[in-house]
Each structure stands twice: as C-alpha cells, then as structure tokens.
Length: 120
Image (cartoon, rainbow, N blue to C red):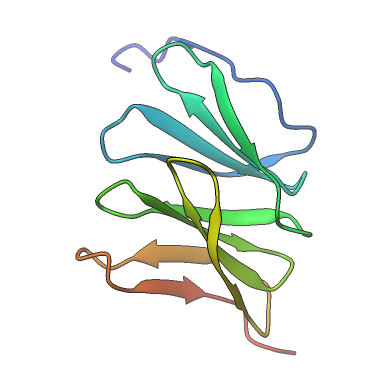
C-alpha cells in the first residue's frame, strides 16, 4: 500500500461492488454487490472461496463480527442476514422496514446495529 500499486483485481461480481470488509484475521476479503451476492475471497491469492446468494436485492453493507465467525449483510431487499463464515449458512434473517445502508457489530459481538434511510 505504500506506493498504491494494484496487487490484484478480483473478478466475479456481475454488477457494482458496494461493500468490502476483511475478516479480523485478514485472511478473507468479503465483497457485497448489486448483483445480490456476497463473495468471500482468500486475501493471499484472490481465490474465490464461496458465493452467498440469499438476498433478493442489492447488498449495500457488510460487517464482520470481532471474532470473525459471523458476517452481517444489509440489503436493498429490506433485510439483514447473519451468515456463518465457516460454511456460508444463514443463521438469521431479520426483516427491516427500509433498505439497510449500513451494519455494524458491537465490540463484544453481542449486538448488531443497522442504519437505514428514513421512511418516505
């Protein structure tokens, strides 16, 4: 990063990427896209590890729990999904009244927060 040289270009999404986050150990890069998918990439070599595709709208935000075991994703489909990183299973789907622009975990990972636009 010192000189801004491109190290790797990850190809696989079919629409714009709107969210990126590393797992806390730095081994996996997670991307969310308007193509309604989340992709997990091995940071070392850019290999695609898994594609998560339970959202029915654009994925707008992603957060990783501090222990690296759970991903939270917010979407245009008015839901938050909690995913187990190890196998890509949805462990909980939380309906929301609006699209979910931002998600975050508390430092102790006991709570997940969201930000959404005001209803019109």
